[in-house]
Image (tube, rainbow over all chains, first blue to last red; front, side):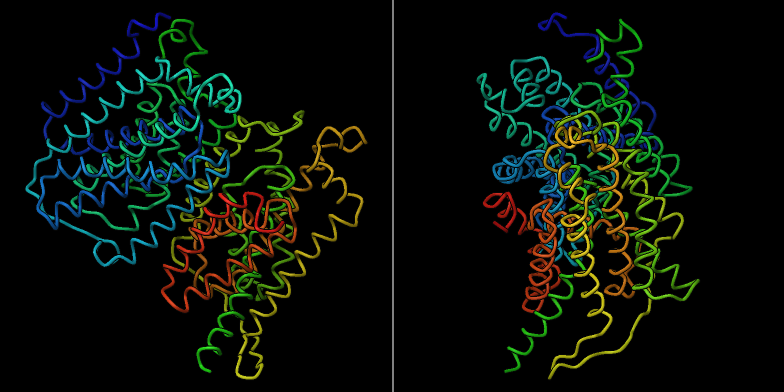
Amino acid sequence: MNLRKPGLTLYGLFIVMALLAAAALLLGVAVSSILVFLLIYAALAYSINFITGMIGYVDFGHVLFMAIGSYALATLVSYFGANPLIGVGAGAMLGLVFALGIGLVILRFRGVYFAIATVVLVLAAYNIVLQLPQLGEGGEIIFNLTFQPLAPYFTIWTIVLIEIALTYYVNRSRIGFGIRAIKSEEDAASSVGVNPQRLKLIGYMLGGLFAGAAGGVYAWSTSGVTAGPAFDFTVSLLMLAMIIIGGVGTSIGPLLGAVVVYIPSYFLLTSVAQAQPLLIGLLVIIMALFLPDGIVGLLRRSNKRLRLALE
Amino acid sequence: MVAAELILRDLAFGLMLGCVFSVVAHGLNIIWGVVKVVNIAHGEFIMLGAYGAYFLNLFAGITPLETAPIDAAIGLLVGYAFYYAFLHRELHNKETITLQSEMVTLAATFGLSLFISNLAIIVFTGNPVGVIYNPGTLQFGYLIVPLAALYVAILSILIIAGTWLFLERTFIGSAIRAYAQDVTATELVGANPAKVASLATALGFAVTMAGGALLTVWIPVGINPLMGALYAPISFVIVVLGGPGRMWGSMVGGLTLGVVIDLVQAFTTPQIAYAAAFLILIPVLVFRPEGILK
């Protein structure tokens, strides 16, 4: 594999993104208002991929950064009348700052201890938000914006595009080798000159930044935020499910996982709301036990050409 | 003296709540301590234990205290099944659990948690239910204690003491403790590691489900499919506070958490009390990663 020349995976991903842009422009509002949620799922999957997928630190509480982004946008738009784009930017920045602060403390815990710390932080944050009168009764802020479906659509589209490019770049760069070294053996990595603390923090901050941005767009598309759904663990778990199903750490896995997780939610939501997480849970069990490298791993093993092409 | 009386009252209730928290977390502690696996679906099995108490009360008219042993028997079977379905492949023929296996078990049990809780919503519906169990009250001076909570507290201590005695004083218990320390050495002295690990997992599940039954006494209208999302994190905090694998650690962690929640709640709000209870974990992990016991 020539690391300097972009491979088929990147071209493939760009073609998918181009199709998504064309679909929104040509097929109208009905299609784009469905696809916007697929893109939000994809943005969240790529964001958690930076920490859990690439570095191997299982983050059960990634929804925290999404909630921070949602509240940033909702506060700015409803109290200050700001442009939603500024809200998305603020959400991303706040996500980054919180990831930096939290990461400095909890990235020192390894394995399950990190995972558990992320769980309790979400619950603590949820209970604190309910106590803040500035964030509305029950943590609910609702706002009215003129209906402009293409603006949030292309915002999240751009975010996903940046995430794809960044994921692809990181996976192939020197940093990527360092990150994979941490994933396989952290102590050994630090003994050969990799700085695990710094790389883990970078990964976690990227995760916070993009989840914050996606949370902002989510609040924008749904015209508000409520504490219960904003801190819903199921969302956290679905993000994790997307990368486990797609293929952890890869450039194409998060998008595949987002499609697999999103499609049943769209078709099943009308019949039984629990059918989606139920199926996803079952799929995650099967994947974790029998196909730990996800759909990407399965495809890679099935065909030699795919093995070289899929990243 | 009203303030002092109130604090004493909150302390007493906090301690009793702490006892039931301890037993709810104790099953997680056993599994975590012996087979070194954190069951993310722990809360879902507490929930199933609680529903066990509800249905047995509804159809057979028995109290949550009488349900506990029945739940424990079911828990033993579920625990064996869980070990062979989820853990055996990752654990057998390994001296210590690798980071890779740890991630696999985290991911698989997380999938299980998603599966069980959503299946429970479909089967049990999302409406909360409860068990009415009120054997009266007991008065100590001005302190009035509901007997149900007192019985549950005593039973919780007995369960934890029982597992401690089992692990310390019986031959099989020694084998389990040996497995927790050194898998290869356990094998060298002739114990079958898979049998020992599956027994420990089954024991953990039995305690967890019995704990779910006892918990129903504290939540008269709070049995619902999503209750695991609260009691699993509480259990994680308790086990870390007490130190995984220390049988009395569950008690220390549980009592600490119960008292913190009840006392903070007395001065502020329930939300701040729970936020404080969860946030304790972070400084403990930073300064005393082995738990608050020395």
